Image 1 (spheres, rainbow, N blue to C red):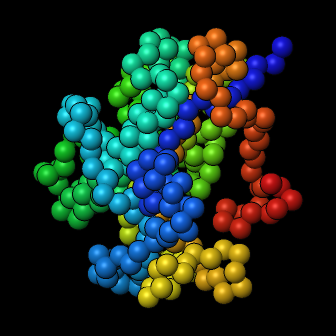
Image 2 (image 1 turned 180 degrees about the horizontal axis):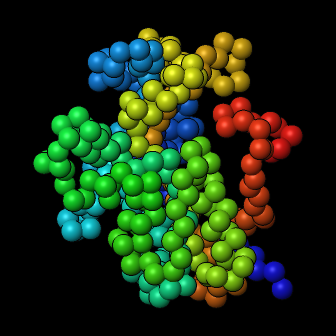
Length: 279
């Protein structure tokens, strides 16, 4: 019989807040998380000055220093979202997380840009290793979220990093679903995280895809409006706990929803302008 997959935990951090109740309240109040980024003024040719950062995010005081030194902001946000999602699923401190029956599928476009900036500036500009920390690479490697989550929470099942730009988090959830349907895991931590940095805005700015309503941050982005002028790059983290249905029922877990299916493919046409017939 086909194994069914349900959602038993969820949490996130976004420009609207650091937990789901705060985010939900912000959505209902129609609050915008977009703001002007004056720290980007020094980048020549960067037209947008708009970003959507997670406000007031700091490393929780109970996180062991030894475990967080390999994390940049993106992995730290992923860790916090996952901590809250596991708590929401009733799995805080549970041996189910560490006994090999739980895995991870987690995505991000890249690792932490500031760590990458330090490494590149020192190595390529100064042609030196002095000033580069042993943990810098661990912070900017593309699989930093998935790897650090596994170490932080002691997860010993399969670890699947997804690094596929805007679909990284969605593919993480999909691959987690497939791991459970296929009988490889009973539980999966799934989701994605991104860190806001000028380099991320620049990628879209070069393609003329960013909003330049720099004096009206509260009025953009507006994707379904005739006057739309582009996107705004933000940051955050979102984690779901996916679980095999009977496993969830057996432990009395709260079930939010069922994942009915997943599909992913390439269009084989263009890397930034996909052909809808192939999607």
